[in-house]
Figure 1: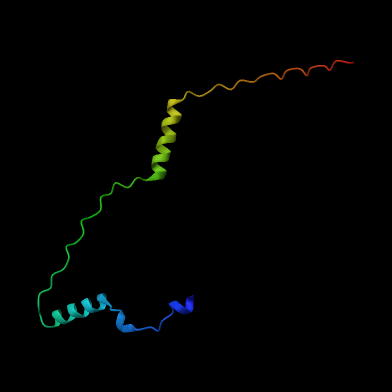
Figure 2 (figure 1 turned 45 degrees about the vertical axis):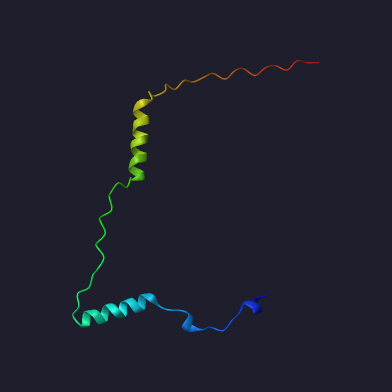
Length: 85
């Protein structure tokens, strides 16, 4: 099956569009033509959440919301006596 799909490599089937565009740009700059470039990207907004800071704030809120529990000690119940048969 692989042999059926295998062909010889023919480089003329493929073109390097990036290289072609780059060579055209270089030639146009050498001749002094003005070039049109893409606009600069707008800065990305900084609404990134600091996860560690958010987690710490959440922990701090829950600490203040819950009153501290009083520690109570319980006496252990006396072991039950086994009935003799």
